[in-house]
Amino acid sequence: PMSAVLITIGKVAVGGHDALDQNASGVMPLIEAAAGKVICRMRPTDTVVGHDSNRPDLVAAMRFESPDAIRAFLESDGYRRQVPYRDRAFAEIHSYVAIDV
Image (cartoon, rainbow, N blue to C red):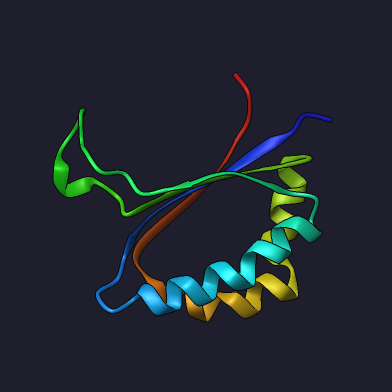
């Protein structure tokens, strides 16, 4: 089976840093339990192509066994319990399933 990467890009909400920390501490063990691995969790600092107003505060990438494993992780009860923290943490968030090209 082909592995897949969950890529999340977000802009943190004003006053959202505590919720971001709560979301991260709740989600990290769930990723491990789903046999996922965090590849990176980073804060972009400079825009080198495109408009700076579009620069996110967080870019994270997590590898899973398959696209279906990512969907199962996102649909799990454990992850759904973290959604209120995620929603408070981010003013804008986008997540993508990516596969090798």
